[in-house]
Length: 128
Image (cartoon, rainbow, N blue to C red):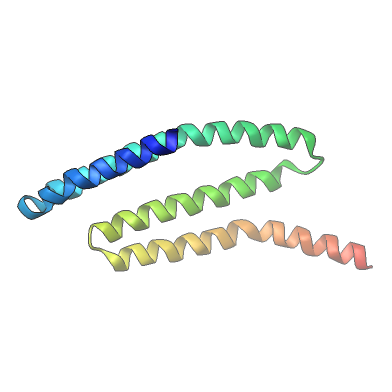
């Protein structure tokens, strides 16, 4: 049911911003930004519930907490990069949006390197 509410809010924001674009484009952009931030912060409430479930899963699994922490960082980086990139594209700055996406991908790669090295170490010890 929450998805329907968020989708309706998004559609209402767009429907309100479309007529403003012809008259005052800066107000349309501000309305779009405010609506996007409203939905983003609403999503953070959902993320806290997901974090609780992940902590419960972690209690059942015998694994290092660093792996789940890294996974959560990667998910967070991905969402923030997509959010910022979309805002830039909506404002008409496609090049900046693309650069944010590239930086997000590089950051995910950098954050995931310790897990890749741990996997390679485990394979090396298994094969040796």
